[in-house]
Length: 173
Image (cartoon, rainbow, N blue to C red; front, top):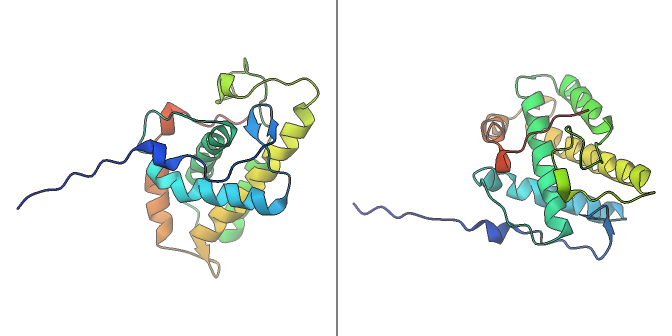
């Protein structure tokens, strides 16, 4: 029997949703619909992207996806053993409310030089990324729990989240 080897080019996973606006080097989506769209897109590619050690980002939307992938992996690892939806939601809400390291020299900023320091925009980027983390937390809870009970898919998501995308890990603050 002949085996077929399928290789996937990570360039197919560049952000479909683009924004003309940027904030500290990240794509900036100022309406709720677009913010939900970029979070959904990040989860759509999440499983696939964990297999890649390199990723050639093509712009601010791709850098935002990198941020969301690393945060999603951290959130999933945090609730991997939770059977109770409310307890899991509470943990993810705490992560969503954490301050976001914005200085490129900050050891807790896993984006390093990808996040550009822009004077006067620190509060705005904090609020923006906290809002995206909040949407991401709700999306993950929806994937992990249905009618208050953990879904079978949760095991698959937790297995995938153990892999580090590009060797990056969320350190929190």
